[in-house]
Image (cartoon, rainbow, N blue to C red; front, side, top):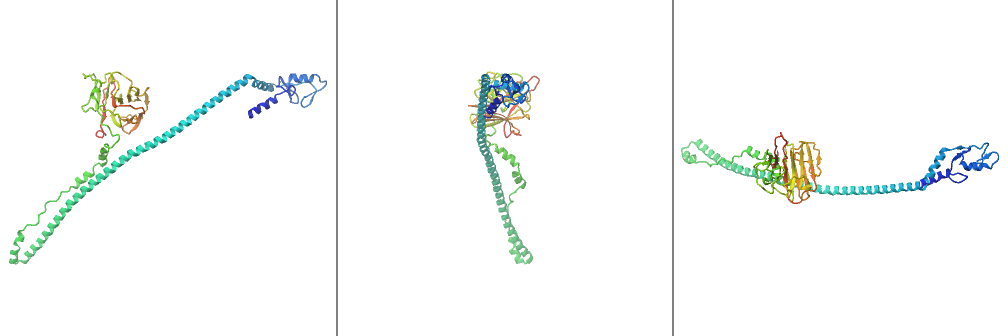
Length: 430
């Protein structure tokens, strides 16, 4: 409204008082009033003598006026803004601007809605995670409390047993000592008397043996102390692995799946690449195109965790594979082909097995990789097993049976093949 009013006032200011239309070739008189050049010339044509201003009636000795180019420019702009083309163009611009702002408003509304949904999701997820963390720690607290109570109860029972045995032996010794002291007193009295009759009377007492007490229990304080002063925390920590969920899986390699260039250790926990392919038995489970091998244990439910020692090996792939993966062809290791993996190339180039690869920036080179498979949530996660730093997580994990997967990759010429090994916790946890 203010803009329209301002435009109307400007149009009025640029309107000729004679023809009541916008100025055409505006000129300015000495009194500062403006008129169309043609209008003022026509107005003065029939006037004899001094001419006057049509508005203020000021007289001028000569018929002179001055062209005002500034006003002329303003008139041109006002006239142009009044044209149909200009109006249509302005309307088009206004419409486009309105549509743009409508679009931005919708974008902002959607962004606000998305942020609110994310906040709600975050709050809900945080509650669930808090409950899970509390449950996990409660299980550990319960285990530690029960273990503490068990050890203290064992110490109490053993203490009481030793005390009973030692106390019983003390009582026997005290009884024997009392009898011996009585005999000593009697014999001393007989000796002091020096009466033949009395000496004959106590002759039998002299020959009688006193109460015999066997040697008591040999309590070894050093042994007793060592039993309970042992590294209790370490011992308990080893026991704790039995209640961990997921506990460290004792996985091994499936020899029937190993590529012919791979050699497994006797206990099936270590794999290393050989310089040449070895004679092998045909088996539909065996990889024949890539130096891959699967774990012997498959998982279809629950949560499972295992660790792979990679050491300083500069090139490897490891993770999880579906039981149904094609063993006869060479494929990209990605979820679309049934693989959820982490890989290393050139000694320091880590990537997650996505399509395309997702490069990872790691501050420290892991020596052991922890793999977590959550079948219920379809999640596969990789950790630096030394400090459990999360390296990468897949949220679209496998459906159906999945197995541990390892590829030694082909060793570069001039390099020595290095092994990959499943770590069996807690025995091998150093």
